[in-house]
Length: 86
Image 1: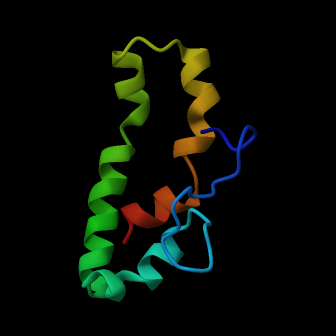
Image 2: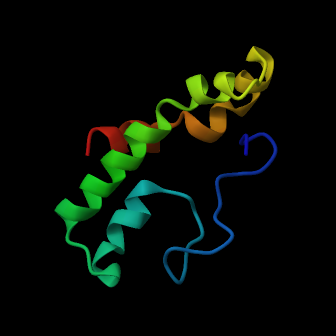
């Protein structure tokens, strides 16, 4: 969801104390899910690469350029850039 409608906060938290949607938070609790940092970063990179093509997929699904631009803040942020370089 665009950040001007709702902040990037998760409905179900990744950690017990913080619902922030943040890559650093997810990586910080990776061991709890049985992942070492290398595995967690590899997963983040794979997801980041898939999400990076969101504009093309949205257009393919028939969204107008204005609709695509409206959703940009939901997908284009520092966490996506960090995931892709993980």
